[in-house]
Amino acid sequence: MSDQTAWRPPQYGAAPAWSPPPKPGLIPLRPLTFGQLLGTPFQVLRRNTGALFGAAILIQVIVLLGSLLIVGGATAWLIYRTAQASDADRDAVMAGGIAAVILAALITVALSVLAGGVLQGIVVIDVANGVLGHKPRAAQLWHATRGRRWALAGFIVLVGLALLVGLAVLGGIVAAIVIPGATQGGGGGGALIAVGVLVGLVGGAGFAVLWAWLWGKTSLAASAIMLERLGIRAAIARSWRLSRGGFWRVFGSQILVIMICAVATQIVSTPISFVFEFAFSAAFPTGTPSSLTGVDTASLVIAAVSYGALMLFSLVVGAITNVIQSATGAVVYIDQRMRREGLDLVLTRFVEDRQAGRPLGDPFATPQFTTPPFAAPPQYGPPQPPYPPQAW
Image 1 (cartoon, rainbow, N blue to C red):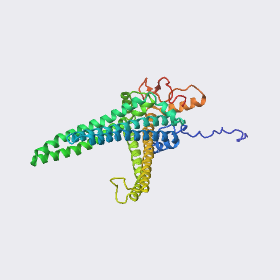
Image 2 (tube, rainbow, N blue to C red; image 1 turned 45 degrees about the vertical axis):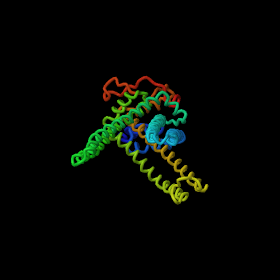
Image 3 (cartoon, helix red, strand yellow; image 1 turned 30 degrees about the vertical axis):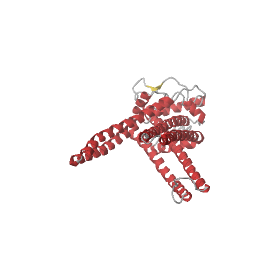
Image 4 (cartoon, rainbow, N blue to C red; image 1 turned 180 degrees about the vertical axis):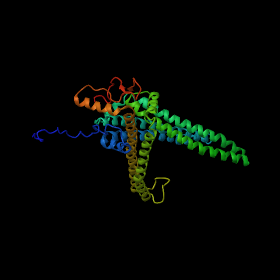
């Protein structure tokens, strides 16, 4: 009788469990969940605080000083010209001076927008480096934006001009209805004014919806300009394609982060504002004096210190929120490329090649599809210089 225990079937171990792609840096190399889309921008600032916060503060200070010089200079010129003008010319000089101050204010707004665009480019570069596990310094980030700054500034200006033109067209339509009604008078004039107000309300709501849609469709263009080195027109078309089929994800995540920053800023700034008002009231119990003559030194010091503290707080909060909001667009851009083009596979292969010491290309280069996108993985173009050099 044969021994039934002489032979046993081979015992195979359990199949290895699936493990997610590695996380070399800021995010896991796979499409992100909605919660990760909202949380990662806050990690960007915490991960490289020195470089990003320092750059944001420096840009804020430059904008503040530039605004003070431009608007302050225009205001001083207005005061000087008005004081030197004769009684007959004073009204004309005053009108011209006010127009100059308004123009100076518009210039400072444009300066602020352009500075925000520069910061956005710096943050995009940092996010791309962070995804691959690098933490570049501020000088490296600034150097990496070379050759892309004017394209990014042009895109920011184009967006601003589009917004101004849309508002101007809507305002012109409303004015064309309301002004004849105001000059006509009577029942017919009142009806025209009512129609103009209604057109303004409905048109304003429609324009807000249209602008939100256009903003969401083009919000990834800045990242394409910086990482794929595309021109303005190509970057807008690229953003349009990447957001196709995922608009609400692209738009919703960025709007939610903006709302979170706004609410957090309001919560933090409210007690600071109360402290400033209390300090100012203690310095000037009877209200703001028309002249500083006779005001004691202690009151002036209290007012100056409290105002300086409020200004410093505004700079810090503005720097933090600008970095977080700029990082959101870059994170959403990378996530959309993972979902639509398999960028997570490219990044994983890049990390493996880096660890193995093999030659490295540019993992964020624009993919060149030689076949329909869903028939085969995308073939990426020739390597480009990394951003910043030697940082990948």
